[in-house]
Structure formats: C-alpha cells, structure tokens
Image 1 (tube, rainbow, N blue to C red):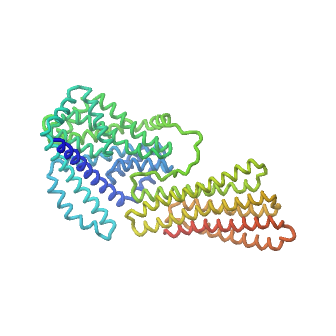
Image 2 (tube, rainbow, N blue to C red):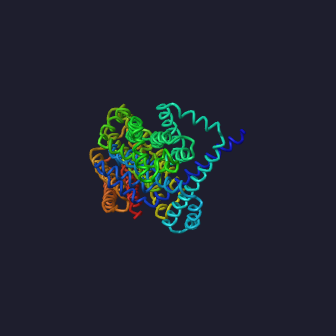
Length: 561
C-alpha cells in the first residue's frame, strides 16, 4: 500500500515535470524566434499605458510564458530600461496574454485524443531539430514542445481517472467542500499553493481542469482554485527580484498586488461572477458546467480570461496608485554601499537575446565605474591634506579590486551564455564582450598603477611644476573625452557604432604623448626635477596605455557589425 502511494506521488511529479518541460521547450523556442521582435516591442513602449498593456499581451502571446515575460520585465526595470509605471502595464497585459494558452489546453488538449495529435506532430517535426537552419530548428522545438504538452495532459487525465479508486483522498477533498464561503477561501489558497509550488499557472490550470472534469471537486471550487492560481504564479517574479534593486522589487510586488486585488473583488461577487461564466459557457459550448463536466474546461478558460481582462480594465487607471503603494511598501535606502554585486545581470529565466541585453547593460555600467575610478586621479594629484589624500588613494585601491571582481562575474555570466545554443554571430558577440570586459579591467589596473606612481612621488616629497601639471591635465582631459565616447558606443546599438570620433581622440592622445616626451627630454636638465620626471614619464606613458585599452574596446564593438 505504501509503495503504491510512493509510485502515485512520483507519477504525478513526473507528469507535472513533463508538462513544465514541454512549456519550457515551447517558450525557449519562441523566444529565439521572436528575439529581435521582443527588443522592438520594448523600444515601442512609451508613457502610454495602452501601449504597455498591449506590449505585455503581444510578448506573452509570442513567448507563451507569462512568468518569463514578467521576469524579463523585472529585469528591464532593474536595468533602467523601463519605468515602474510602464512595467505594471506590461504585467497587466501579460496576465491577459497567458489566457491564450488556457484556450489551447481547454479547446484542444482535453477534448481530443492526445496520441492522435501528438504523435503525428512529433513525426513531422522532430527531424527538423537536427536541421542546420536555426529557424527550422526553433520551430521544430516549439512543435515538439506542443506535442509533449498534449501527451502530458493525456497522462494527467489518466492519472486522476485511476486515482478515483483511492477513496481516502476523494473523501478528504469532499470534506473540504462543505464549509460554504470558507470552502471558497480554502480552495483559493489551494490554487495559490499549487501554482506557487510548480511555478506555472498553466500546469496548475491543467490540474484544476482535470480534477473538476473527473468529478473530484465541484465546478465552483475549481473556479476558486483558478483565482488562487493567479496569485501563486506571481511568486516567480518575486523570486527573480530578490537579488535585484528596489525598482525591480516593486515591479514584482505590483504583479502580486494586482492579482490579490483582483481576487478580492472576484471573491466578493463570486456567485454573480460564476453566473456570468455559466451564461458565456452555454453560449459557446451549448451546455452548463454545473450540468456537464465536458463544459468545465471552456468555463474555466472563460473565467481565466474574463478575470484578467476585467481586472486590467478596472485597475489600469490606478497604475499611479499602485506605484505609490509599492514605493511605500519598498522604500529606497538613502545611501547604498557600493558592492561587487552586478546591477543588471539578474534574470533566472532568460533567452539568449535577453542575456545579451543584460550583459551589454552591465558592461556599460562597468565602463562608467572605470571612468569614475579614473576621475579620482586629478584629486589625488592636487590633494594636500594627508588624511584626505589617504582616503582617495584607498578608494582607488578598493574600486580597482571591485573592478577585478566585476570582470570575473561578467565573464562567468558570458561563459553561461557561451555554453548555450548560439549562432556564429552570437558566439562572436560573446567573445567580443569578453574582450571588452578584459580591456575595462585593464583600465582599472592602469589607473591603479598611476595612483601608485603618484603615491610614490608624494612619499619621496617630489612635486610637479606648473608646466607638468598643465600637461597632465591636458592629457587627462583627452582621456575623459575618450571615456565618454567609449561609454556612448557601449550604450548604443553595437550594429550602428562608428569609431571615427574614437580614432581621432586616439591619434590626438598619441601625438600629445609623443610631443610631451620629446619636450621632456629637451627640458629635463633645465627646468624639470629628475625625480619628478620619472613619475611624469610614467603618468604620460600610462595615459597612452589607457587610451589604447579604450580604443581596443571601440574596435571590439565596431567588429560586431
């Protein structure tokens, strides 16, 4: 008897696992097919709430995974690519877009013999998984995922039909149905837990349909489970936002609040809501879900769609209020210590397209950190107060260490991307990004080397004359301009970057270095202190080396065209 229970549990886990794998395969294939489309949709989003909601619907319809869209949205907010207001609109749209999958499950998945559909789909499309064409391979992956979805639903039906012999479980569920309004709340909670555990509202939705269709629980309590599943599915984005910044946490929380508010009003008008669902189901199916279990899949799909559409219509006008509520719940700390934690690489459920966008944003942030580090050098040269000087020098050392760690973390992430399924262009992009990260780390090393040279000069009580200070300032001004151009190129679409400005600055820096060194040799005995000249040489030479690293970065970007 005990072994039977163990086998039943493992069988259910296996069926749900097959279902989730099929959804993952479909989702990843569609993400690859629609990768550039996703980027274009994000670019299209402006301040319009309507555009944001429509973008959420379209993205989820393309990817067929609302959890992926929501996590992507949280990542975009974390990366500063979307505002919190825009993200809430997208999340609302994603809730509507995910109901398309419910129609697929209810209209095809449970009213048709899965084997009749699934096996021919596998037979027709499986060979294309080995095609050299990325497009054919991705469409084949989607079709195979669809076939596996049908098979998993068939297994799910068979599992619960067989479980009817287990009267103990049946009696336990039946006992929970006799508490009136309390039963509604219990099954809302049950739906929440199931959806949170499997991290898929679609899997929970399919289980609920089968439970009701096979007579385990009545229609109205299955409807309560559907409502709860809308809350449970928000756990995915909240998990993804744990390591993100405050704005991303707010975006994830807004998803939960949106669905919680919706479930509250739906529970209050529960009986009237179900009357409307019954009427709509009769219009579509010709029979009531209370009288015919075959109508339950359509009824639940109507409920799922109606709930999310009505909830969006009711709350879309209150997005500013939701923003203020999330800001109140998750306040931003006035001061945050700088850490080695990456700012933009956060996603747990990313396509290669999303991973590249995150890596690109992180590398641009890395470059800004490098410029910020370099900006400390002029202060180090001019500072006379010993205590302040030591603070600046220590800060440079700490920031350089941080840049070393950041390069390691970015490279680890790029290696994860590299190990995935990438096109030749994708592989080239990863290698170029790794080169850029290495060059940025070298900029940090060069700045720290210059700081140590300045420190050595101060300890030996050697000072630059005004002419030397002016020349160093001129060199640093050019380097700051080169940094600005580099950051501008890193922020831009790599395919449209031109390096004319970068090349001109590189030539100017090389010429200035050559002129200054020549001039230095001529004046060394006349005007320059010998000891200061050694440091002066070092700073000018290191500046030219830093310029080379900057230009190498620009070349790496331009090489991706």
